[in-house]
Image 1 (spheres, rainbow, N blue to C red):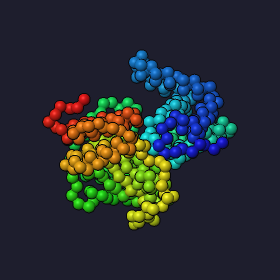
Image 2 (image 1 turned 135 degrees about the vertical axis):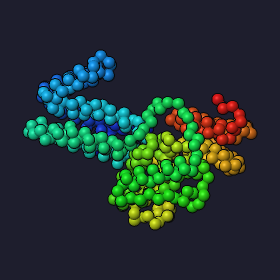
Image 3 (image 1 turned 30 degrees about the horizontal axis):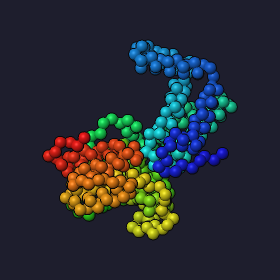
Image 4 (image 1 turned 120 degrees about the vertical axis):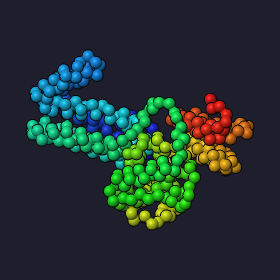
Amino acid sequence: MAAAPVTRQDPDTFGVFHDSGLAAQAEKIREAIGRLDEATHAAADRIREAEKRYLAGTLEQADASAIYDEACAVAPHAPDVVRMLSNLDYLPYRVQNAIPELVNDTNIARIRGVLRLIGEELDNYLADSDAVHLTNALETGLQNLHNAVHRSFGYWQIGRNPGPVAADLDFSAERRGKLTGQLQAALQRWVPGSRAQIRGPLDSGPADDYASIGICWVVPDQDFTDAADSLGAALSQVSAVLSIHDDPQLARPARRRISAARLSRAPLFWRIDIDIRASSAAADDLHDADSPGARGQAGNSAASSAIENAIAAAKAAARGQADTAQILLRRGCEIIGHDPGSTADLADAIISLANACASQEPRLARTAAEIHQVADHLLRPDRPAHR
């Protein structure tokens, strides 16, 4: 049976783990491991028990090491069995904690392919007892699984309970320049032969402290889909990625995609705008701009779009552009049908919109809390923090 397609921004990641075929392949590997010889299973059980006791503080490190060495002497692959089973148990949580936009067909297929090869090598070993197959499955296969998961879902993730919110208010140009350079290097490292160039306000002239970071990332044509679908993982080499969204006008082209991301270790105003282009479309600024086929259903939800308006309004207000901020706020409120009430305080109106977005979409609560802190700090620094 073919695996169900994975749509970008599918929030039911545990459902995706089962529906995509990942769960079935992981279970097949567990079943194959279950058919290994009893000596290997007994040794693996001793290693697991020693690890549990050591972590619980009831077993000294020297004793745990002795148990490990004895188990390896009886069954050299016992530690690999323990590691493989542990990684299989953890895999659904990696899917759950990934940015929903990264749980897509390209990334799921990459992991599914590695699991399939591991299962095939285990079946080959059970059929002919050639230890090379067991090594390929439990050692090389596990390393390939690690690489595939990192390539798909990234290196740094903040998880579901990352702790208290503290708005980043360091807007220094030197820091932004360093971050921009790190992002360019990370993208170019991710796809060999690609080039990442600064675009937008940082490239066209002097930019204020609040300007976003714009990058045009040109990749070889054959790498375009993988680069676009794993963009969040690429950026995570620098910092955990909080969110990433495609421009719905260019969400499904074959040679260009525009995405916007926010990083955990960067000010809220420093959105990362990435224009990804295949080499054959590198010089075409209007590629697919008017093509209905390039448009996609995926994109910001209403609440996600509206909270971007709240951020943009806060940025405009911090720049002294009150009229622009009011326009952005009005548009944001219209998107989610929010009535901010009558208030002359711009910061209050921004916070009201952000909180309304979080009420409609709870995953935006951290962003709303950060907007609250930024608005307090930049728009009313002489007043006590709004609670």
